[in-house]
Length: 253
Image (cartoon, rainbow, N blue to C red):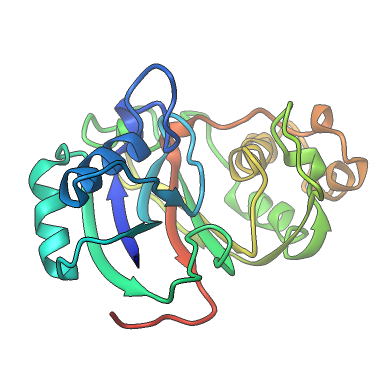
């Protein structure tokens, strides 16, 4: 058996999310069906993260074990030939047998995109949250400064989630200024792991600060509360991108 690492990007607008489900089209389901056709047998593809319905990826990673001896370049071409245009395989490389897209990951980078203008471009609206009210980005940056480091992020976790620990480490939060109806404000967050809806809830909370409803200092109190009810709304899925999955050792294949 060979273990392959598949890096892909997708427009999540029309999918039920990464994970295969009983109803609806999932990215995992499409990829498993495409790989199975090359393997000649059913396969299980493991993703680095289960992006929700409507969430996009610029660098999702999947792993799969199979016996087919096609080269990585051949696999990439073959998969892209059958996958819908909304899903593209960027690279296929062979990894060590123990490699697992999720359990081998050391961290992830997410982006959230906000168009802060009276209206949003029709070529951007599928990929950003439209916030027409004026945002105080300096106040949002001040509020976000408390996120870096190791903290209990229970207040920013989606309800109904079950995890062994809600403590995560955020390495950095980077801002890219936006402007106008077609250039989003980008919030990039890099960490060792993320809870369900964590980035979207952080963003929703920052927007509450940005529009002046909350002071930047409230962010620290929200985190200390460990209470989801104290944080802001969950920002829409359309603005969220999984940018990159980080691994401790990258192997060429």
